Length: 356
Ligand SMILES: Nc1ncnc2c1ncn2[C@@H]1O[C@H](COP(=O)(O)OP(=O)(O)O)[C@@H](O)[C@H]1O
Ligand code: SF4
Ligand SMILES: [Mg+2]
Image (tube, rainbow, N blue to C red; front, top):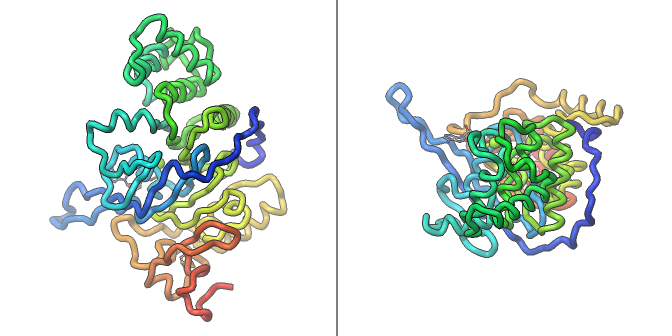
């Protein structure tokens, strides 16, 4: 999907935006141990998330973009308490959940839900929709199967634009868009306050993608939901996110107000991602093609088990300086707002080394 495909309407005026963070992540590190030794030597762990920090105000959306393997899903899984974190802090609704004991997980899952890319694998294929949504209603709201629960399920289905007749259907009898709506209804069943959306539209047709994005926006406006929205589609990210974060090899390399990041990218990697994104305007398209020429095409990023001491983008970056190969840039203020990790914007690079 490109920018032209995503002409959407938001049916309900968004509420006044809050500045109160609902989700805060501080200096998060997640590593995966190497499974087996290679030629008798122990392999280094995969450093999937490296010192990521962000916060998402209540009722807003933080979009996370970046190529496959950037660590987006791992960061999300850490927030969902599905992977162990090496260090850092995760605060949700004012509660530090970094070291939540197992017995507290059930209560946590009432606040935080997830919608994945592939609704088919997330829905039990042998259960009808009424059961799939209903079992969470029973578990979290203590309403047993029966007419009262059916009414709650029908209401949840209606909230995601599905009729009550679908309660008797199996996931295999639904379209991809309907399945994703059921997955959203199931997430809503526990009345969460934060929904982690991990590529929720990537497996859907373009026209259906827009409908699901509109639905998520509508639900956010009505319920004040907070979203962490992961996508590799920049047009989708631009549409839905209040703030946009860009990840590269486990690092959050840039973050800021979505329009600023999109129209005035500060990090060369963000500029590269944008240059790869088709736009309808032929002049802009030519500019992006020229920008694409500047990047080292076909150069592989370093392995996440052997990250270089300096900037992980150095071997692909047209602005690379000596300092970039030695030192990882610290976060600094990005022109126009937000944060960037790049020596071209930091005070650490000597003036003679700075890119113009
Ligand atoms: N369970 C796992 N075990 C080992 N390595 C993993 C595991 N999950 C993810 N990784 C690695 O962590 C890095 C980040 O992956 P991921 O978070 O899935 O990225 P993204 O969602 O941005 O595509 C990748 O190098 C990936 O191979
Ligand atoms: S720190 Fe250096 S190599 Fe890394 S993105 Fe900035 S200019 Fe390029
Ligand atoms: Mg992923």
